Image (tube, rainbow, N blue to C red; front, side):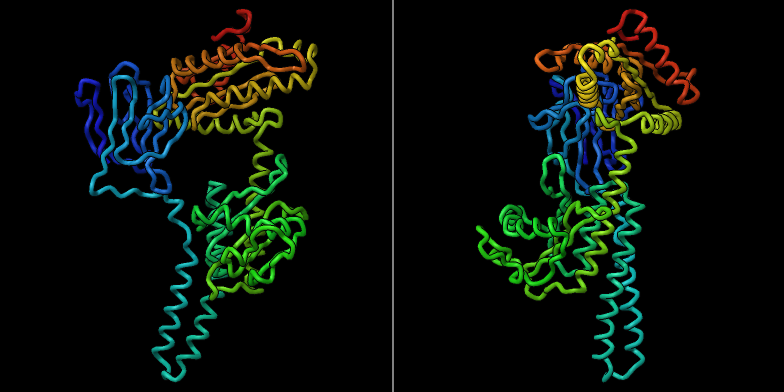
Length: 480
């Protein structure tokens, strides 16, 4: 990908074809940027351009003052957008970026994504090679019998390999959405289905929601899901699997289309269970008459449904263990772990790292005056304000009863102070409803950044706590 950067007068500031695979390139005014621009209005680290795991070109606004304009649309600070070759990017009023596709461009996907499937393909290849060698040593009149045995063996090996594949993936794929998609891919591969869905029950909204989908064309989604909605609900409510030709599941008296009306020949629905509770549905179907799903499909889908449920359960347990129940942001345990990780990474790559601590001013008095329920409402709103100010790689956490923390990797003191100033303003400008009244709160902010005096994560935390105490001594609603 060729990157051309120019100013309003047309002067070329940069022209080159850096690799956008891996971590891609960072454009900004800092000395550590891959492409450095010494222009007004350009942040230390302004944007990052890279191919993601799916081979799509992405732009992330890292810390621009006002967002980045891509083809006339604004990408907010901290957000990631998928862009296309030929995109016109406005970094400031005077600096523009153009992306031009070159003949040799080949996006490289994340290595994790290339790892799977592994067992499925290699084991099938091995079995077919063995049978090929057997055929070369026996009379031709036995070929039909051997071929039938080969087909049965390949089917069983594919099934076992797919189960092994997903079991391995549970401990190897870090992305929860990708793990669900991969489980669905394996389920389709061994059942002879064409399309699939994983649906989970949203307790807050009291409905099933699709969390993973494979091979549905855009025009099919609404019509076909409406045709199968009755079956999905029945599977979830009763906990019973339904597998076989779609005409067996026609629902007399039901208004609207049935699966058969939508051209669906065969369906397979299996409930997802966490302990004895139904939490969702695994759905597979096909529109080809040669792929009628059978009892064997039932056995395999139950295994995949159980594996998907394990992944979901683990994710929920992790969320519960690392998330503050009131604010829905990270808790202190997760924050301390990430602080250690990011601090070591910053030292290893000689990057800046900053930490902001904030105490709500007079929160104890607020709780006594307005009650605990309204106090929790304030905490939740403060968590939302902090979360809205984070970039993709920042972390915000509830660090104590009325203390919040924000970790800012690759951010110097000046950048952290800018963030703290914005948070302080947003906090004091926000009115939180408490019955018929509204509550206004302020906070005291302490900032610490890596330096020669910070040899370990605890040093950075100690400096931030010291700065916070200084801000509180000044009377609150201050930054130190």
